[in-house]
Each structure stands twice: as structure tokens, then as C-alpha cells.
Length: 242
Image 1 (cartoon, helix red, strand yellow):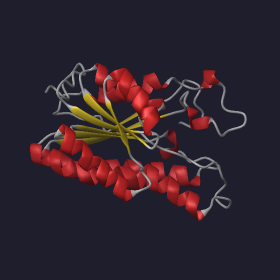
Image 2 (image 1 turned 90 degrees about the horizontal axis):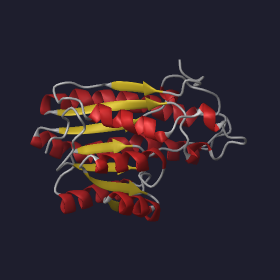
Image 3 (image 1 turned 135 degrees about the vertical axis):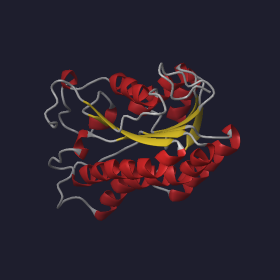
């Protein structure tokens, strides 16, 4: 396996991608597969993940990121069938567009559980094997909301700020064992994330998810003696950063 060498050849490596049924997760899974990785596509919507998996030669896996048991069982499934996990991409995320005072406790917990607790739990279950082998990569998908909070995004901004902190901790704990953790910080993308907005942002003010997926592969493709800790990728028209 040449995982992590310049050029993005992941032949022989196993990648687990969450939120892989649509949007950035789907595009990232497809690109990893095109570059030789055996990809497991985890999503709450297994049917959607299955369609992407069929197109790229990967395998779909049902995973409810709000359920700790589903996460642990999913990782166990991948390790049992694939034997290892070399790359973990935490791409799944959600938000409820509410003011801080209108947001319910259940909505807050759901956002934080999916966007922050799930990446921690996945890393918790994946890192021991990576550290034992002396190699592995964890790529967390944050957001420009991790850099600058805006109205009606209390839970989302908090979870993404926390995700950057978690990424730094994971890298600190893993680097001595050949495991690196990184975060990509994308601005607005042309995905279904903005479907709840009325009206949604104009498409010309958003970037295609392929642009961010290419950035993820670039980060994962660096020589293993270096690390891109954090990479911010936004549309030229992005107003939330800087």
C-alpha cells in the first residue's frame, strides 16, 4: 500500500467515509476509490450510500451517527470484513437553523452528537488499530462556522469549533505512532445542506463539492513525514470567512 505518498495513490488501503450517501461524502468516497482505495461508505441512508458504492466499487454500510452503538458496531463490521481502516473521513454533518433561544435541547444534542461526538467515537474505535500498525489518517470536515459564528447556528458553530479542537488533540496523541489527524474547513458548497433555507444561496455563490474533495485527497496524499493540519477552502464570494 502506498497510502499517503505524493500523487494520491491509495492502492491497498481501506477508507471509511461517513455521510457518503450524498454531497461531499459521496464525492470524496468516489475519488478515493478512483485512486485505488477500498472504500466503505457509511450513511444513515444505506440505500443512497449503496447507489454511490455501486458506481465506485465500494461497499455501503448503515451507520446512525447519533447512536453510539451503531458507530461501534459499524467499525467492528469494517474491521471484520476489511481487516483494517487506514483512512477515516468524518464528512457527515447536520444543522438546525434556529436562533440560540429557539433551538431545542433535542436539536442541540442531535447536532453536537453527529458533528462532534461521532467523530470522537469513530476515532476512539479506529485509532488503536492505526497506532498499533504505526500508520493511519483521520480527516475531519469542519466548516467556516468553526472560524466565525453567525446567527441561527449556535449548535452548528459550537460543534465545528469543537471539531477543530478534537482534531488537534487526536493529532497530538497519534503523531508519535504514525497517525495524523487533519481538518478541512470548507465554505458553502452546492449540496443539499442549504435545502432548508428559503431562499437558498445562489449556486454561483457556492463551490462544487468536487473542489473540497480534491483538497481532501491532496491532504491525504502528503508524504507521511509531513501534515497539513488545517486547510480552508471557500468560494471566492464567501462572506463568512475571513
